[in-house]
Image (tube, rainbow, N blue to C red; front, side, top):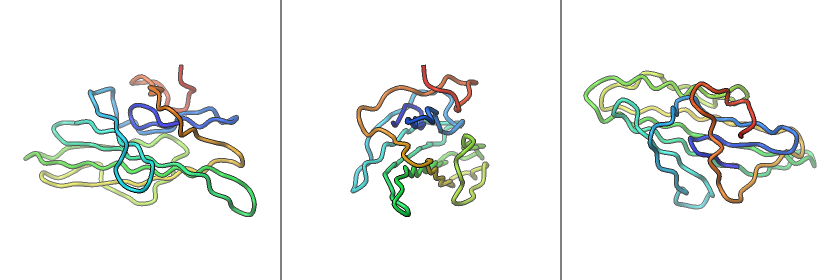
Amino acid sequence: MTCLGGTFFVQDGINRNFGFGIYDGAPMTWADAGGYLPAQVTTFRISGATVSITEFADKVVLGGDSYVAVYSRVAVDNATAHVVVADPAPSAGLVALNTAPDTVTAMGSASMITWWRSTASATTTRGPRRPCWTAPGASLGTSPT
């Protein structure tokens, strides 16, 4: 289930949020991405730079077993005249598929792509989105309240 702040909640015995500590509760927008895939995008600003977190989850079948694969992209676009520190701070369990600097140069950009694969039979929900983002300072590994 996609949640506010660029997190997602995994059900079926895992019952855990995964996400990025870069989002600190600042005002943001939350929308569906355009295009083929059903992806959600959270967009907000840090030190004048625009940060977007895009997430897509789907069922995959490997060797006859069903899994959920979640892909996330944290992109930082710094159109300011100063350097911006923007560490995505992915929660434990997310695997980086690339590396990106935490410091984004003036008039520069960076992006980090991660993925998460469930244990067999875990599911995410494509139903209504809900604000299950955890409060600043709280663990992203806890169930939403």
